[in-house]
Image (cartoon, rainbow, N blue to C red):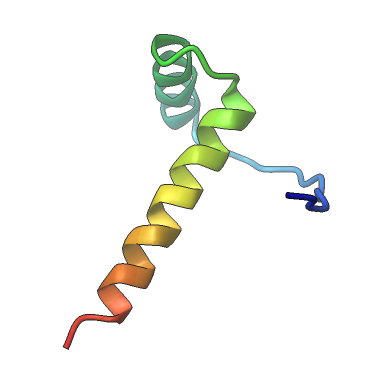
Length: 53
């Protein structure tokens, strides 16, 4: 699947950044991949919630 990418600057609280780095390391992902993974999972959850009666 081809997709375009957009580069952004993101400011995070220090503790949130440290947590994301730790979780990414645990799951053997880059920080970028971890953030993308969490956004995609969150998007799926929102979509599922939107379909509930």
